[in-house]
Length: 276
Length: 236
Image 1: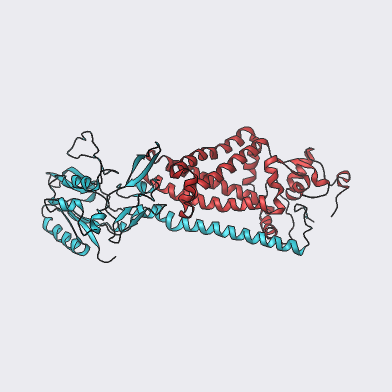
Image 2: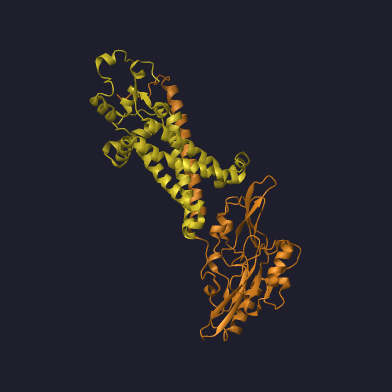
């Protein structure tokens, strides 16, 4: 990976217009998902297989007892150590040369392991029906508009953002910018912080949050699940080695038996009854 | 196996319930592994087309999973005595069980070995049973969380994947040994026909499970092979 690029989201500049949601649907050809009224301005409860980014609206009482109306553009974080990539049994999930996490639709078998292991609850399965009526599933999520990045363009959501809440740029620059911005807004938002969690090796969407992550419904310390590490880095290789080891031992036993049979003239054919 | 007459005498070793339970268990087990292999390693992805795609494999795996749970109940309901004896043997460990293993290793590789007196199940079979029971519990419990992720907490589902994987590896290694010994290894092969017909050669049973055999002789169920009239043709 040469230069690392990340998406920068400064939620304090977001005005909740949801143009990023529309731009995403538009560019990625995602069907509309009509929803019932959820009781807030928020359109969808969470991202889905067909809605890769959702503007979340949180009504929060701040430390001074005032109301803060907190907006956040939410979509895949593109973790540097992505749990979905780790647990995928078919290697259908991979990192692009720019560090984005993408799903290969042809290889995905729809098992849903990624869905259960994503620390941010982002990746989801979509149900399909082929022409014979056979149902199948595929995992979907934001691709960071990898097809656009490859052409030198920026993600659709970033391009469309009219307040400058989103930018796309080199990682180091973005982190510097985010830290500077946090300092600027500390007075108004004492809990402001840069959200680039270390438990997943950092992310390719870096946020300036006005409040603690939990206020936004985000995990404070997201990480690749310990179970996933034990499963993929230990259980699986040890299991394979164990099966291989037993198979080798048995092959050895088989050959040794043939060898001794020949030596003894093969007359020991009494079902092992030579217990004298 | 033997040409002598005595070993053609067959004795009953396994009940019908055991034979049926073992067969269902074995078939379900193998089927479960075949439908799981492409998910375990991409090396076996070529199985997908044969199984009706990932969806077909998933469906078959679930049907077989149910079949895999049944045998325990078949054995327990239709042969409770045999089941309890099995359980009792699994928790009974004596010096002879430990001696068994050193002799077993020699025997496995074809060296000269002697038989250590064993009861209905030998120490190796007991280890096999215990490991398979542990694996079955691991696999069945974690299988449920994987099958119905929506009704279990996420953490449980995540640990389920890990445990299912552990059960897969351990179960595979154990069953390799189990199948090798019954189907290929010549000294224990009568056990293979035995688990299908329920009957084994008396002489083989006596030498391999001496304590059990002698008990059955005392009860009058099995012929006493040391009796001169049973012995007349014993050669070699």
